[in-house]
Amino acid sequence: MAASCAIVGLGMTAQGIGLGIEARELRAQAVDLALQDAGLERDAIDGYIRCFVDREDLRYMGLSPNFSVSMMTGGATPAFSILSAMGMIMSGQAEMVACVYGEAHSNRAARGGQPIGAYGYGYPTLYGLMGAAATHAFHARRHMHRFGTSSEHLGAVAVTQREYAVNRPGTLGYGKPMTLAEHQASPLIADPFRRLDCTRDTDGGVALLVTTAERAKSLHAKPIYILGGGTGHNIGNWHTGAPFDNHDNIAPAKARAFKQAGMSIADIDMAQLYDPFTISPLMQLEAYGFVPEGQGGPFYAEGGARADGLIPTNTGGGQLSGYYTTGFTGIMESIIQLRGEAGAGQLSKASTALVSGHGMNAGVQNTWAHASLILGNTP
Image (cartoon, rainbow, N blue to C red; front, side, top):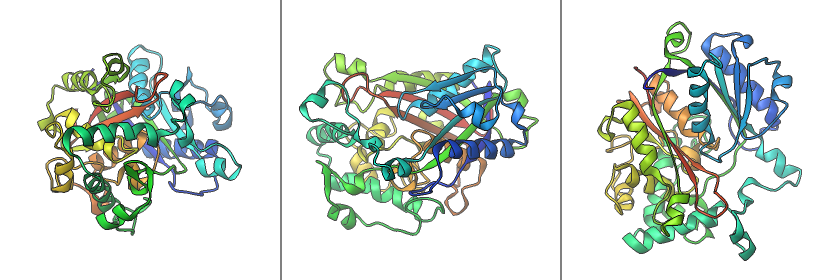
């Protein structure tokens, strides 16, 4: 599998709050931008994967693929869509698959619709447990209990990611620096999370074009190779009574991805990790082995995730300070860095990236799906 497929087109619309554009139009714009990036015409797309659910995209965009699939496993969906695209290509079902996301959360809120963050997760909803913040708070409190992690450590995650975003045009944090004191002064949302520990829903669209590594050589955009991928599911930790000790069941996802890539964590230049809340990248850095278990908080506080640290992490601001396109946020930032297109935020060493996706409970809180991707700018 290693480097058999590549991402050859990236289409990203404006990202933000209150764009005033409908979700389907955002997806259409993203597809057009991805085709332009790759130097392709519309009829080149012969496979279409819609991240989340919509049945009308093909008619609206005038596409005629061999297949159209809607896929939903929360914030892990984008990584799953890429792995699925590879499977369809390698099985001969398509040659150029579009993986597409686009949501207009502001429009939903303006119409009085339920915000996406109000989801309940299985039977605990009957007892008042609502929303992603409340469920992730279990991970944070458990980590605090076991290792002495503090609110200030969580704040260090938020401040680090804002430091990346403050110089990146188009992000929510652009030109808006944040201090640890400001983090600590922000109101509690779901103990121990403060407002600045939480991501914000944004409007935006993104499309990626996936094809074979061989075909990628002849296209316009610099190809980004998919070196490895893996999946895991935290329902296994639920069955053994330890779902809150583990942010996800990362071990099997990590093992498959790194085995396929023929790499170790020492070969990774940057981590772009799913970050709905500050506890998430902290625990994932531990689970992937960049940081000893329980030491994620001090690691962030000492600058380990900054551009000059051991492992630059969420270098575009992530979802906390960048924008929220579910798991596409980290994938897009990886592509931008691997292509050398990050401007003032470009890392000096950016040849490989670890990306994670996370989401969609299995009927009870904290039973998240997980996906790992290893991307590189050479096969």
